[in-house]
Image 1: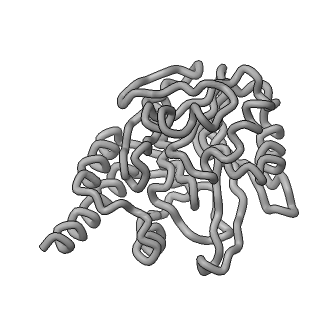
Image 2 (image 1 turned 90 degrees about the vertical axis):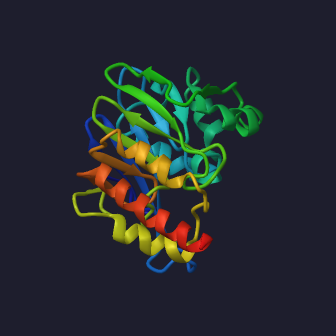
Amino acid sequence: MLTNPHTGTRIDEVAPGIYRINTPLRIDAIPYGFNLSQYLILDDEPMIFHTGWRKWFPFVSEAISKVIPLDRIRHIGYSHFEGDEAGAMNEFLAAATHAVPFASHVSVMTSLNDYADRPGRGLADGETFSTGKKTWQWIDTPHVPHGWDCGVMFDQTTSTLLCGDLFTQAGAETIPVTESEILTASEAMRKPMDYYAHSTKTATVLERLASLNPTTLACQHGSAYRGNGAGLLQELAAILEKELRDELA
């Protein structure tokens, strides 16, 4: 559903109770443009994962308000501390006065508790919590794809992985969810931009995520993917492992 014809912002359900808010971004640095997504979890205790940039709060919040009032939000989190993931944190906290900000323990320690207007909740690796009908697991993914504080969220109820910058796809116009593989498009973005850390543990982290058997990959940039998420994660792990071996040879 298009919510702002001027910015192109829209909100669409990509898995049961999981809504993708997406806004196109046209910049010269990336051919065909780019895009940013936030995710609204509609449950007894609604959650936002990624806030978007502070300056984008008016039209991101406008999209969310088409589904629920902002003051119903109870959890506001992100994968790792960057402007496009946490920039509008305080605007959301002001609108949702009962919401608690959250991130990894590392991110709360290094960034969130200084930046946010309310104390943050630091999630431990493997920790689970409920938003009502959904049970979420936090997985630490340091430096995968980048950021010491990085982590992702897995919905054990719908097998949806909120995977942050993994499988980033370029393009200002992307469909909300696709069943076509997204690895080719994401590799076309990753290789020239080189935004993955060259870590010896990357493949191990990706294999761990694959073991969750996600059936929806909710990407921050690009279309969400519905299908064999484990297979795509394993393919990516193999590609990056080979690249690392070649670098070290």
